[in-house]
Amino acid sequence: MGQDTTLVDRLQQFGFTETEASVYLAVVERGEATPSTIASAAGVSSSYVYQLCTQLEQHGVVSVEDHHSPTRVRAAPPSEALQARLETMSETMEEVADRYERPSKDFEALEVVRSRATLHKRFRQAIESATEEVFATVPAEMVPEIADALEDAVERDVFVLLAIAGSTDAFQNETLSNVATVVRSWVRGMTVCLTSDRSRGIISPAEMLDWKHGDAEAIHFENRTVSLSVESAFLGSMWPASEELLLRRPTPLPESYDSFRRAVYDATLHHRTGRNVAVTFRARPVNTTETPTERTGTLAGTRQGLVEERDVEFGMENSILVETDAGEVSVGDIGAFLEDYKAEHVSLEPL
View 1 (cartoon, rainbow, N blue to C red):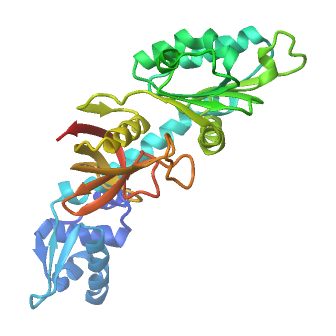
View 2: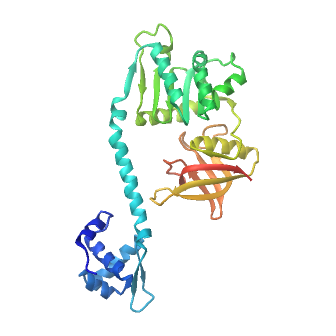
View 3: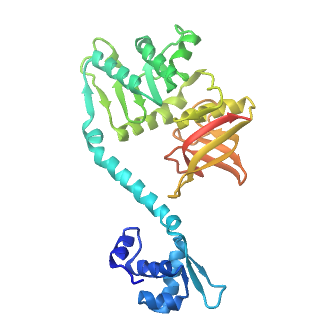
């Protein structure tokens, strides 16, 4: 079979050079062949074929069997060899598409809020739209005004971290446990902030909540970049500087989690009670483009900054430690870089 120029061009879209594509096709057409046969079919020198086949072997598309005499080069099944490249291209397309859709959200969805009524409205909207997480620092007098929205969020299994600035003496534990997963007392109530699902939120000076707030202004944003920055400040400085008041009971197991931090929270509390817990996670190794696969093991612990005792170096660090057949591994969120794996999904089940 003669080589197809169009097919060579298409293979270059998978990251092959033109010569690599020609050599690869020469191997594919024969299943396996000697370097001299490949060199003749691809129109390159035999010495160069050895170099190219070594490179192709590193990419996993051929195997070089140099224990034979003469050396033979065998093609891997294309459905396997090209699958990882297809997935990488698909991920790239999704990321580019996300950026294509993002500009209006990242650069235009910033609103200056100048009235107390609008500020409360934006707070409630952010809480009511949440499906996974709400992190907030608010003065004690504001809690009753948004309590029903927070209670509804908790009922929807939204993971709520609430730092209350000022005295909490007027609140009973039952009231606090209904409005948040974790409640802490924050004494430096100069800033009011909220983030919801890492995509929207509010930053405001505390005086905006007074009826006479002068020229004070708040910022409402629907902007992932800003949201992650506010979230990082919340978890990195406000949260650890506050005092833990209340922890909501962990979710009964078995449970599957869309929110990784909720999984870390539950895993932490279940592990501290001495429960034996099985962990199933769909993940890929960090810094790879491998296809996510499902892995299992037993819960060995967590690293987290959500509840005391905190054992992390920075606020955004949260991971689950899993004992597997290959030893203990650390599992992080989809954006993990310190851990061994980044997980798309986690399930916990009692043993």
